[in-house]
Length: 84
Image (cartoon, rainbow, N blue to C red; front, top):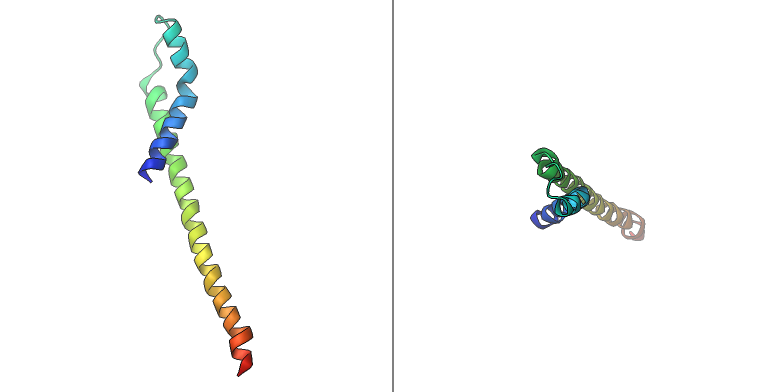
């Protein structure tokens, strides 16, 4: 989770600040971007995206477990129970 958080935050930081960094390097007099827009906004987007993805992974994992349990139960009903 920490690695995915770092990667997502870095990607959001690059996507949202790449044009600003290029403009700032070309023209040092270019106005500074507020700290909240420069760092906190990409960080918060990275955190939210990571949480959403991890929740979906968890839901999918539990659905897979439930599917396997139901499949075993149905197999038992239709094949094992019918032989008796």
